[in-house]
Length: 312
Length: 312
Image (cartoon, rainbow over all chains, first blue to last red; front, side):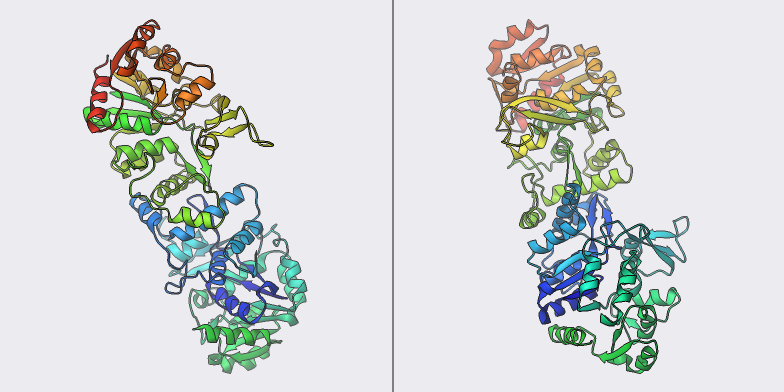
């Protein structure tokens, strides 16, 4: 039994690798929903979808996001109508959001719908939202546009503003009073191995830890938790993790992530580029393993997955 | 100033004709919203959309409904996911519903959104929903499926069951307590001519009349109201108007429609096939004009529009 904490694209890659080296039905992914949004009336769960598409082999390898073979007829027509176009929704992707929104409207839980969509696409890994309660990452911009609100929804920051703005702070709206989705705490408690994927520590793993009960459950399993650093030589491979770490007062390095993760991660995998940081990370009380962590192809992905599985 | 009461496809044809013989900016169409539904989280207004597409020249002349040049990528993917597929939503059409749902969610009124969508498509005729309140046609089936509810939503009857079932009764849920949309009563009060399009009297015109204030406003303008019979030689050209009239105890004929419309229609246009009914219709206290009413091409459509405009 393996339980993984997952954001979107970065986590999805490692999960694909893990599902190649472990029986996928023995894997549970607990997925961030802090990025979720309602747009055009549709409930959109970007991280759940990224993980589902990747595990189904439907992820678009060219763009690095969205669905392979995507078309854009709806989006083109919506743009012609003057509709919101900064959050791109492809036709194939839209079917996911229509299905989810209809089922949620019928009273299905997000856990149910996530399972239904995964099963419909042949995904055998068990996918769980971190919570069925709406917990939303809200970002306070250091320099908001004149007259605009300083606090914006996550996708406003991430997509509309291309995360190319300075962040003053952020919070996980709704976390207080929320609960882990059914099965999440059990998946952490009963796993032989818990994997923290190389996702953004602040806005992908952070929301998961904000759900009451999850951080303490992880602390209780610390010796079984293996994390992969999302920061290599001070930089994130994609997304704003490096910048966010620095802006929020952390060190933008594997060591900085290690400091955040030390309370609940027993073993930390850092890239060979960060070998020099290993002693400082070990000094935090974590085991530190130095391995190649860049998943540039199927072989490196599988090798990292094997390293993770054999890490403790 | 011309004000038209409109359902969907049948009304749309006459409106296109009217906009050719009258300055389209002088025309206001008051459109049935009793058929509206929320599906996949999207607010869908089939009659407003049929009228808009037709006036924009975007109506699909081959199928008789939907948008020309339509594609079905979302629908095909949704079907593959096991989603609801009986209500077909094309990709181009979906852009309309996404736009509308987003704007309504932002607090725009249905009147605002209807105008925005019409203007975006170059429609110069003024389009008004009959009401901004949700008024929904609910159909009670004479022989519901074993264990199923006898009362269904309109589109369940119309599309899912292909209106191929016997109807016991129907009602306009929400009509009591609803109001005409802003501008509707004024459009009736101030029009030089009021046209009741050849729409289904029961489920297209009926909901409009169910909004408090509209029927009495029409009665006060009876001499200025011209209706075109949707029944020709006992049959509807499309849809279940003939069957519904009979099932609900009316005569399925232009005379049967005339009896329903007599309180508020001063002049009734019936098809040449129904010339023999003219004396009985006149006996209801209406002027009856006998003209070709089948709009099979642009010429017959324009001829009917001219006959309507010169009717009183």
